[in-house]
Length: 598
Image (tube, rainbow, N blue to C red):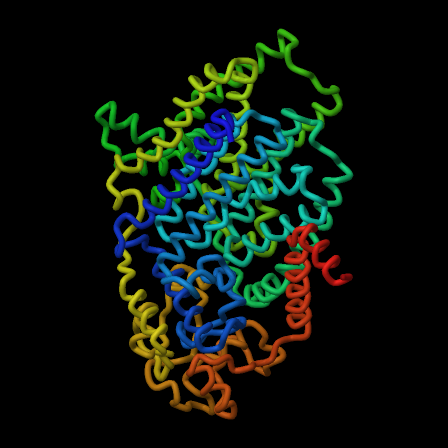
């Protein structure tokens, strides 16, 4: 490989590795003190790992660890089949979490680069910068650092664009990639990112059409969307049906309401996107107190939550490139140096873009004409902290910034292009250093001591199974060492103050029988009460002694599943097999057929 080809590869690869490594380092910097919400997700990761060690690689339908017995797999935040959970079978769990974050950032970075380079036909420098701007965003960094494990799959966004537009992929392979992206989102509990990605794609598609309409092969796009969508639905239908069965009783209806005047709300969103990477250096240079950034964002969004919830920051590079790109486009259009598409197509694309932006703004501001209707749909009503929805603008902004650099460098020599690109790319990466200007305790709530759960993991690997024998008033993390299920779990599906949590268990021995029932909740009654002759919060009947003992010993009791759930499980298993088959290279299949014939 000659030097001309080696330099782009080196810079592009190094940029992605740097951003991914920084994200993992930032999450881990105060280990064993980590983000507060790891107390929920990491505890569940350990619980599921224990299930695997006791039961093998099977679905964890229920767990006795929390709340006197609760659903596992049917819970929307259960991530049993996520990347970190699978990695924890082979390496210690905190390393598995950090490794998965590193991999997710690299996957998102590579996907963004491939889309910008191959589909939009940008040069390698704009494609690299766009990938860096997308990957090095404050939204993902802050949520991971605070322990929001359910945001882990946000970087898969570009995979859908690669699947739709990279014509080197066959239609079956592109469909399999769509299904893989959907599966990663749903099975990693990334319900929020699923909506953010959907809104982001709605904005990105018309924007991409304006840049390069010839890449829109509509018959091909239709086939990939149809087949990929059906395969993704088949792959995730088991989880979706289980979650809907549980959430019909506990919809977690927590609507947001902000008192900020609507005319100020866009300012709040702009400040969010400017965020820590823009405001922290500015405050530092002007001698202002950087810890007041949180109050500024709260005042303009009306969301009185932590900075980690409000920060959507992109590198200040975008605030140089965006106005520059708009001026450049204006000049090229006036000078007739830019191809102009037919008026009808431009009108349709512009209308679609405006509608997508408007819908995203409604979700972000939690008000408007469509949002009150849409938020009552299944799953959507459980989502809140609406300023998070502004993350849908991150990829489109990164894309347009990359397009600006593409316009500036497409007709100049590579040496001159490098002189423009390298400062921007270096600044984009170094912008992550803005998070070092604010005390970490003001950036995220890092107060959870994780070493205790790491000790539990080591005991599990030594053969401990931590059977449950009583109910106690303890936190979630003590459930293992104390061999107890806790009376008041940290369980957000029932509300932050457990407003819809109505167990009938009491502190005391699990074997205690009252009114013909053991002192443990029958979790099947919270999901599938009809086929189990149960009801929500009903305890396990004394007549089910064998199932009760299995449950305490962390074996799955074999409570009944409805026929629809069994069918959904079969469909998902078949879809998984089809998806994996489609990923097998044709050359390998051809070689196998030839070997069989011989």
